[in-house]
Image 1: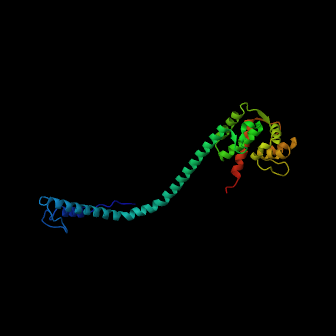
Image 2: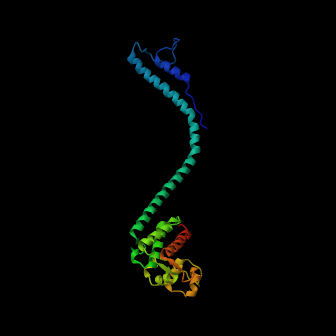
Image 3: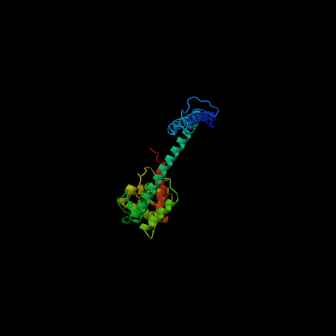
Amino acid sequence: MVKATLVDEAELTKGFTNAAGPQNATGQSNGDPNPYWPQNQPAQWASNFGQRAAKTLATSVNNALAATSPAIKGLSDQLAPALKKHANALGKWVIGSAQRNERFTALLWWKQALCSSSLQRSYRELSPAGTAIALSFDLGSVSGAPVPLSVEYFLRETIRNVLPENPKLTLADLVAATKNDDAVDPCLPTAPSGSPHRISLREFLSVVRQAVPADETIPAYAGVVPSTSLPVSEWAVWLLRDHLAEILTVPEA
């Protein structure tokens, strides 16, 4: 705890008395007094008074600070780790905030441009199935993971910008369109091998690119029957969720 240290009033009085003239009220001198009285030699007196008064004040203040200095240093040593910790936390927050703002700007630009960075072409040039695959992949790549629920609605609205009618597709339609669309390959993961087993929709569409499974095996892969029907926007949201899950499960470098 830092305690206040008072200026030595007696020493300060003695010093100012010395600065005021050759003697104090009792006719005595305190050490090294001003040899001049102001009424006799005002110019010389003023010069000596200023020097002696300044020296007296500075000495008293410095002595008081010297007594307080160790306590202040101790307090500084105690506060330094906490201040460093909070400074690091603040620095991380500032960096994170800048990254979030940069990502938000990128999302808005992406939605306005409606250009696939992975395919280097407009989404309007793709089939409805290709639009769902490419849009969901590109959005996940731009947004990163995790993301708030609003990102799914952001995707739905972007789909409607490209496909205002937002047509419904069955899983069989999605499979057939994907099989015949070479453009979507950069947006799909590596196809898993082995016998039919439950995998993500994105992985299933990668399997489809190699060979369309028999209808009776599709539920084993996708968890739903081929006749399952959804608007393009909902297939896109499903694919986005798969992509975000992939991002979250990849270990950081």
